[in-house]
Length: 179
Image (tube, rainbow, N blue to C red; front, side, top):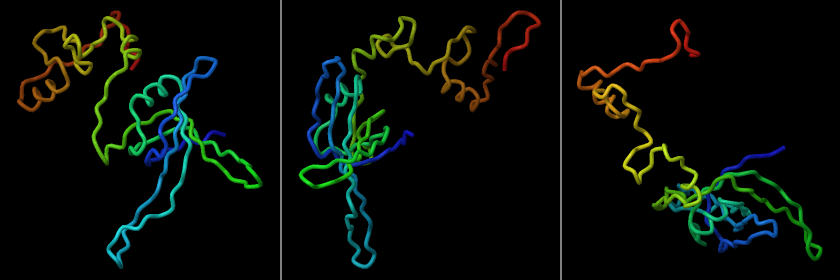
């Protein structure tokens, strides 16, 4: 059984990046996830217990993590939780590992700037909207010419009382649409 978990915490170790002999990129780091609560008697914040997680990111996520994350930054991690028992010099323990499906900065504590990677943008088809050619992915095709060309325009037209063009479902005459 696979347990999916989402945590927030601080990166406690410098992210370590390696490429496996198979060519798969891996970035690993530890995250300290703690709780704080307000002690109403003293009116001071009190730290609760800290949970430690080993986080592993693979392939493109590993490459992006290597370029984006640093020790001390606050992050959100979501992925598959694995608990691994260990023994070393007579000591036993349990390690919580997360195979990350997604991770990023926790915007509650700061700001971040997103930059699409070259490998990702190279998969965009030529006819797809892109910021480089001035087209927005949220605009809709306009075959009538006088109708709003995006959802914001449609809402503005509705508010102003100007009727917006109704969508037309095209198909063979006499055919019903599938929805």
